[in-house]
Image 1 (cartoon, rainbow, N blue to C red):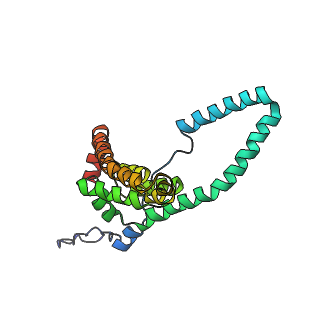
Image 2: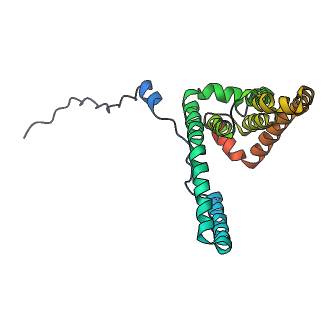
Length: 213
């Protein structure tokens, strides 16, 4: 047996794990919004389709249903490339745009300037709904709030220069188009402000959680 020593033993210092480098934290994928594959809208549309198909089958038989399916498949094959392009555009935009700058320019605290930027962006946004709605979804994903996004969609619907130049001016004339645009200018800002007001009242807890984070 050994003789116990009176000398104090050195205290063991617990090993501290080195924090992960900033590069690893920045390289983590950004969380995306989880979308349900089947929602109430899908169920309702499927039920309406089933009822309509049964009514057509009862009136026109199997040939009538097959004719409608053939026509719809050809229509779907023509629309599918544009839908795919629009979805890819929205996905790429959500990855390219910097979250901090979008949140600062179009976020809940952007004020009137955010509504004006959303209105201007919607007015010059080219393309149809296959472009506009994926872009709007991408803006929501990268930090834009409901108000600025509503202003963008309403501006694209009412002021969009593409439809005005291609269709409205040749058919309705320049004077009508200009006055219609001038009268429509305040509407996207008002719609965005109302959307922002309603969103804050309906989801106050979500906004407070985002500010705390």
